[in-house]
Image (cartoon, rainbow over all chains, first blue to last red; front, side, top):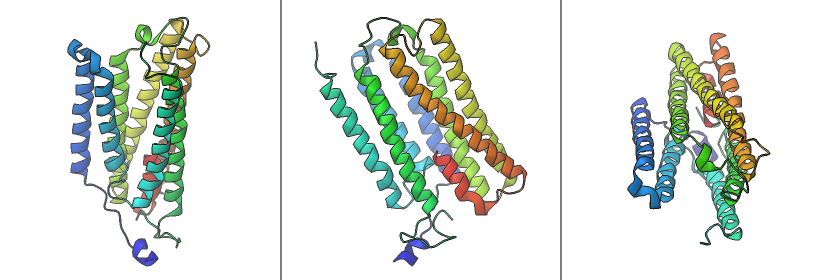
Length: 102
Length: 174
């Protein structure tokens, strides 16, 4: 099994894929900036920006950091602390009453 | 190429890459705590300047976009190194370092402007949490730029062939 793993080659995305991802990232960034200047989006600005940022983050990690094509153990090594960090952040925000209105 | 080609490991994966992903995991925890601290104290400052008074969103968007494009240049550098294309490897490594330097320049300008407008590390909770968070990020970018320049130097010395692609990949992960 180890031998099998040793010969497992991670096929990195092609240059064309990298460029397509860059184009998508550019569009998302433009949308982010656009949304910021449209008054109608003001009440939901933070959730929209969070979703768009999460999308950019996922694209960079999957394609530019190759987690989509690399060994799953790397994904685990990255995702587990990320989930812990998100949990800690949410817990702190609740503890300090950030979500409590008024 | 990216896996344990040079030495045998129990997982079959390269130890350096494994260690680096573990390090990146720890970075998630570091920046998670810094971002949490910033969010927890957001809007709690007793004195100004505050977020809305001072942050320049268009400039921040430009610097964010600059870093995204540096990610593109980095993977193109990795692809060039992997296929043994020395010229384009140098071009993309230099581009990545340059984009990193541009980000640092924008951050230096931003920090200087904020200080002139009365926001320092000790002014209020916003200043403390903002400068610590973005300062740590800037420090990481600075280390990244130096790392890229050493790779560029290695390339000019003729010591950055396809067999060293993992070194470039790890720098790219950073």
